[in-house]
Image (cartoon, rainbow, N blue to C red; front, side, top):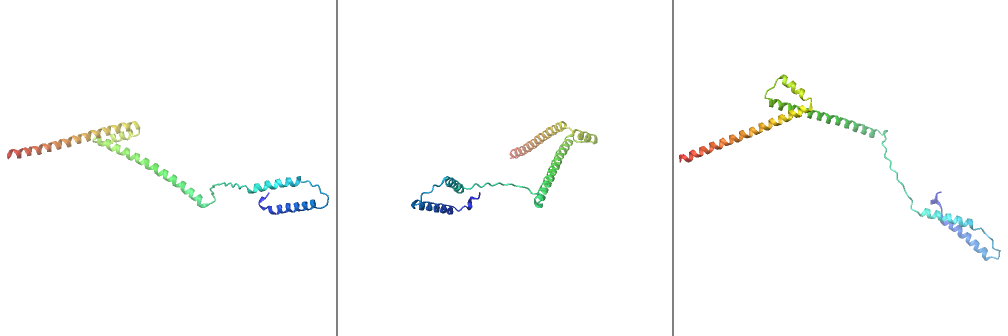
Length: 181
């Protein structure tokens, strides 16, 4: 039922016309006509219901739907390119992690060989075999770090001894200059 097109003024005007005609009959000498007003009252009630319904604010529901239309070549191409980029970058990151790990192992091998002082083919082969096991790598790392700490301490002691000898030489020269005066 489309309530927006009901002309209420025309309906009220129609009721007014009916009322005037009824009033004229009442004033005339004709005997009063008995009318059944139940149908008119029911229609009036329905009309009032419709009027209140029309005056209520309308509820507007919004439904938002987001769809990815694969038929659109721009969106589909963008999704494919992004997926390929993610796969490519994941591969690159994995390769970089592998090469960094290899560099760490090679650095530790170099430091171990340097710690040994010399090496031959058999020792290098044995070292490569040891690097296949994580516990061997940990042991080698501890040995190398301990050796490097000891070398560093020895270098510091030698530096202190050198400074002390230079200080002794300076003091001896100073004592000779004071003695000769």
